[in-house]
Length: 136
Image (cartoon, rainbow, N blue to C red; front, side, top):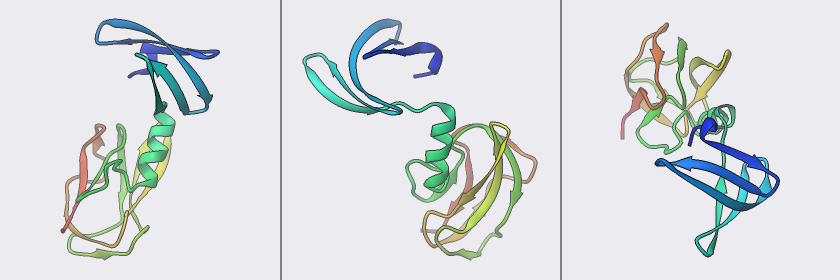
């Protein structure tokens, strides 16, 4: 839910979702909350763009992991640090992407073999864009 569609005040979150307005009781701080809605408790995390980028970069650029390195948010490819066919050890820098006026080093989530590089230096990319594919 975009930040413009919700507000957190005291122990309440007010939000708009699918053209409906909700007022939800919450307990928590920072990004982790327990909410009470529809008669039950749920644990949720609320991320702003900076926190989402940080979490994405910690996991190799893709919150879901898998067979590719994906852009966690819109940005510009500054430098590609690998070549197709290269075997890259876990936690090795793969590329540098500028997002939110910061250069961020995106790293391999595990040992991977680079199958294909889907972008080039200077490209502007959207959130979710596949940047690099790994061999299975």
